[in-house]
Image (cartoon, rainbow, N blue to C red; front, side, top):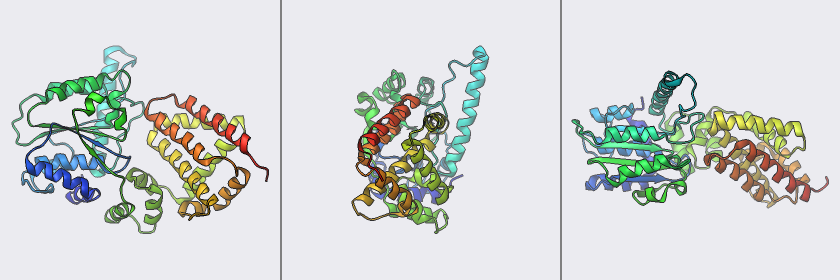
Length: 386
């Protein structure tokens, strides 16, 4: 379980945001719906959990006290007034009729509970399931059945919807169902929608939420957080620099050595820029599977490639180098020599399209094929001999 210091440390990551939220619940004018939006890994989910704990704290202190019965139950994310909703895999199309569907739903429920336990020990743990590309309509319908029931426990009901942009996936039926709740919100209840992509939400949902925009984390704040959580001081400068204000990236880096990251980037560069049909097929098939089984790792891999190309671009301009570039200096110098006239910023935009396309449920195989074609058109038009 997360201890009270972990929650307080999470709050300290966004002091400006937390001061605003403090003012909300100390004033007693708590709204029925909020939208927490901002870049990935900036602490939105952790702050949403702390906000929910603070609104239910029995001591009514400015920071969740961590010691009362309510705060202790929030630390396990098992509080009676807490509901967390995330995108889940659908049980439709499962063989075995109703029995098979029920078995699948029970399996998904078990996986969700295990993920909640992991989230309770690490507030920056990202709950992501393979095949989960939407917030299911049954999640919202279940919420509507229970949210209006009278509670006999003191406090405020809190509904946290993570990756809320997936309310709009497909026909947007989940978003429309949630809209009915927001139009007639239950008493003593607050919903917090959390997303990296608020522009993908239905305008009708946006209009009914008080919006709280989160900035990226300051690198020094990430460094402080890592130090407090007992991370080795040797890897902190490397993790802080490459994570670029994203705590999810920082977490992904903690179990990877510099050598492993360099090898990953080399493999990506070779796969994308090498004119070889077999290499292309392996790249498309391998990363299509990764996007399906582990979308966060997929996004992380392409982020590293983007960071690498930006390093090459800065080297061309004679600007400063960074930790990652120092390890790849020979490879990027050779790359710059062969592809001196290539617009690296344009290729970076192609890579960004891949990442954003994943969140819009685009066909990954087609998107990766399109990427390779665009990159090699750029290379063949601008390649220099050397």
